[in-house]
Length: 234
Ligand code: SF4
Image 1 (cartoon, rainbow, N blue to C red):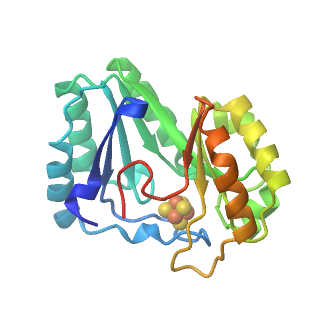
Image 2: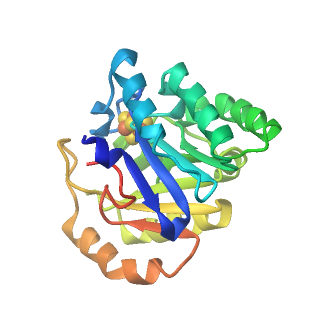
Image 3: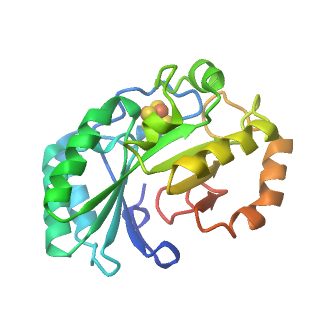
């Protein structure tokens, strides 16, 4: 990934977004995912992340930190630098992503940041609330019996993924309704063909693209038809 693809000034959402390099996703099993490849040893990622974070100006007081995995898989030195950037650039809202299995760390980070006057907005990739599909087809690793209410008690943003073979418009509508009723912001990601064996369903993809303009009118939704829709990534 080019350096330029690691920072985005996103006025529509009034946020700066950085795509940092971590140690690599611990899970690496989600069948649709091949982006956990953006990882490296701390000797490579720490200086890279430092240069990316130096671009943050704090102009919106809102920073989104992404990496190909969970926030807690960033080197400790990078996590410390994020805290320093938040202090130096008067960031009052920090968004990050985490797998469900780090939920206790999310809760702890939220408390630490609240004490520092920073609101943490944790985001989770749920992809679908159809647990059978999520756990057996997608292999998300969240386990079964986790309720939307339980997830929303910790995370206030969620991502849904649509357009894979085996999904349906009916399930998408159910997922959207559940997500909207529990989460402050919902990211709707269209599945983009990648190096995994997972295939896109062209009919579902076209249906989503036809419906995207209407979905984009909803301020609770961020509709992404391309993986690079937030201005970061490749
Ligand atoms: S979707 Fe997230 S949790 Fe799943 S393998 Fe990819 S980086 Fe890891």
